[in-house]
Image (cartoon, rainbow, N blue to C red; front, top):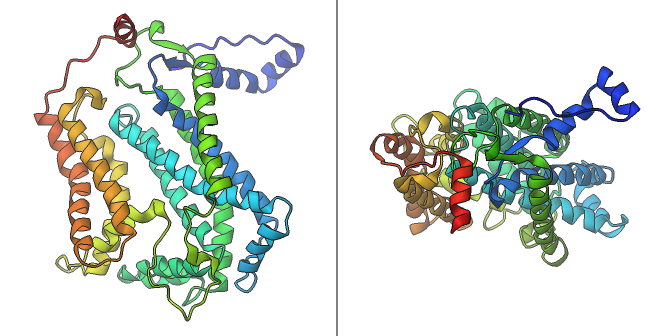
Length: 416
């Protein structure tokens, strides 16, 4: 999709490099002359925002690791030491802790944008699957990072989440023992999670490179969901896309900074400011907010499904709710990509968004009364959206007429 390279080396150094390692040509083709659909809206800036957040998390995490003690007797105090005794330690810690939430806010917007505009459809199936892998790695890194402060919610969250694996027949118990390094969450668990939490972001960075590579092979989708027909449909990535990305990165950083400087603990849990105590169970154990919809799905399965008991059923539903998204390119049978031209899909999509948001709220509430019933209804719709609604809509929905080209739609809008 990037077409023939327009890069011409000018300086002597560039010419010398071009014959040996054409990295300048690669950067020019990917970040300057790369043809970008001219009708991209601000939702397409979240890819750049996510890349920025990954760099922030890696850099701040490396600095924190220099002062953190991965020992169950020292971890909590080492975090307090970072906050009180390390120069700018409080700022680095708040940047990292709130950066995880900002990362997930950006990735959820990025995912929903891809879902609404059909960015997972042919020929972008592998691009989408790589995105799902990145999301799973983010969830793993976020969970293990939440354990490291070794507060009450860290300890009991690790205990509850790792206990899910015991529901898996035969292999569940060995997996849990291997993961936590023994028969209970303790020092070995903390060391394992610290090592993996440090490693996983670099794996994410590697998969992100593949994700961007796949994007540059198949080209960017656009709000119309139609292919680029001519050069008039595109503009160079720089300065058009870079200026837009830069503006929204700054706006996102302002939003991020508000949490860091004014509400640094708003997205956390107060129990995590109490040292971990295996003898005192918190009244209500909850994961971080970005896991709450899946936690609600887990708790929604309160009944046996044939030979599958409720505990295993909940675990399968929770992991299945993420795994099903990887098959989205093959579940959606519609030939039209963009939700802009699919009236029935739009209704189903916004109901899906409402169900996920409500599941997030229900995940933060005690699992009693009507909360479980509501979670079961939302869980049923969540899976129905992927497994029933999207496959059926492709056959019964009558989409609106698509424009002939991107430039035709842009010019039609400019006349109004």
